[in-house]
Image 1: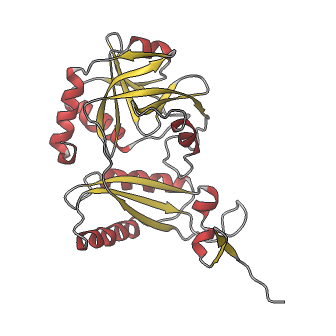
Image 2 (image 1 turned 135 degrees about the vertical axis):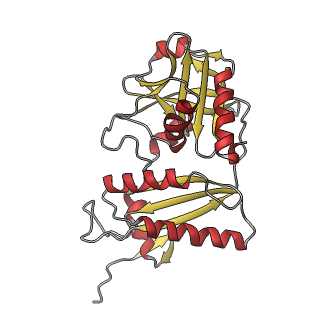
Image 3 (image 1 turned 120 degrees about the vertical axis):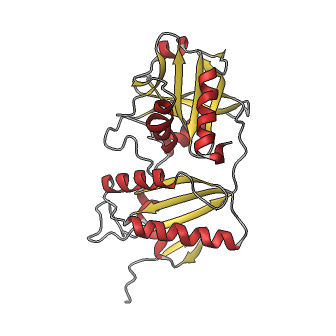
Length: 285
């Protein structure tokens, strides 16, 4: 009898593709970067690739920077041929084909995937945040990494259907604020100034968060601290904004706390940070 090492079907139809045994699909063994495309360029590409290479090493995925860059350049060339110069490129790097079982194959050949999508609609004038009941698990080894397993965010994001809320606050098992379902978060209070959650145990260390902490806050000489943020911090804050590499800086106009809507104002320093971001990265104007 003839032996077959791999047989599969999709939606009931037999299929033959080694991509169906990809470890990213089977186990979430991979990473992704969501990059803003502006005038045919990727303004934050160096930040994205630096994080990708660092985190790929943690996940045991050997990949060369030059190989990733070549794949991105080839994909951008294809987009230019289609007269596409604005939008979002999602870069996915998986551990490639790995067969059965969790153990890594003897040789990992990374699979590099680029996906284009149009720039989503979003409100830069201000958003409202839901309070998610789902709690992020603690995992210091994987904390900060934008790996492919986003089930925590899927569970949290599907808690609300009202379009009034653009995003949701996510907390850890100790009820410390970590992030939103799709962004990092910064809070301001009269007593503590600007603070952002410590991500040692949970959450994604976003590219825009790094830009703010390493570039924009220091450039504007605005102090910011990384701390564990609890309910008292939320109760005392007067300004909040979220940030990611697609939307940039988004002020928060209100959020749910104890089943009540807390309203906020947009402080002058948020506007200063937005202006500085736009000056340095015009795609966020």
